[in-house]
Length: 266
Image (cartoon, rainbow, N blue to C red):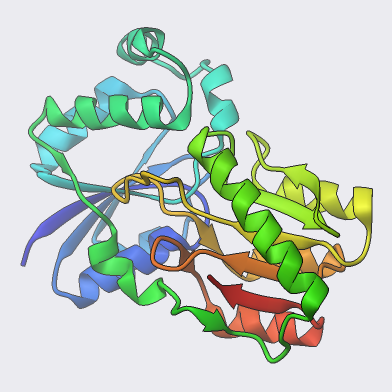
C-alpha cells in the first residue's frame, strides 16, 4: 500500500481519482481547495484537509505531517483566483510575484517547484484515470453530416493553434466561421456565449495543448458540458483522443442522443 496526495479542485474528477487510487490499494490524502472541491471527498478519501488558495505555510506543515512523497493535481481551479489574493500568505505572495507571467503553465510549474522543496513528486494522474480516456470514433447514435464534418475539421485546426498559444483549448464554430474562443472564462461560459451569438447548429471542438503536461492539466468533458451544449442547441462535440478525460460517458451520451448532438473522438 502506498500513500498519495491529491490537490483537489472543482468537478467530479477528484472523486474519480480517489475511488480509483483506493481501489488499487493506495491511501489517499486530499488537500481540498475551499469553495471549489466537493465535500463528498470526505466520504471517499482516507483523509481530507481543507485549504484556501495561497495558504503555503499551512500546506507545507501538512505535507511534512503526512509525509507525502507523491502528489497529483486534479480538478479545475478557477483562474480568477490569482487576482483575489486576500487569503495569500507571505510565501504565496512572493511566489506569485516571482512568476514570469500568470499563464497556467507558469503557475503550475511554480506549484511543482514548491512541492519539490519538500521532496514531493508531482505524478501523472493518468495512472489512476486512464479508464476515462475514450477511443477514437463516433460515440453518439447520430453521425455527422457533411456540414458538421467540415466544421469539425475547421474547428480542430483553429483549436490546435489556440492551444499552442496557451489561450484556450476550446473553440466553437458554425459554417466554418469561429463563433467563440475559450479564454479565462472557461468552457461552460464559452458554450453559453456561442449559443447566444450564433444560435442553433454550432460545433464545439476541444483539444489538448501540443505539449500537454499530463501531471498538471488534462482537459475534461462530462455531462455538464453536454447539458450546456444541448441548451445552446449545438450540433456536435468533437474532442481529441488520448489526452482528454470523458467523465460519466453513459450519461453524457444519453444527453447527446436525446438532443441529436453528435459526439466524435478525433
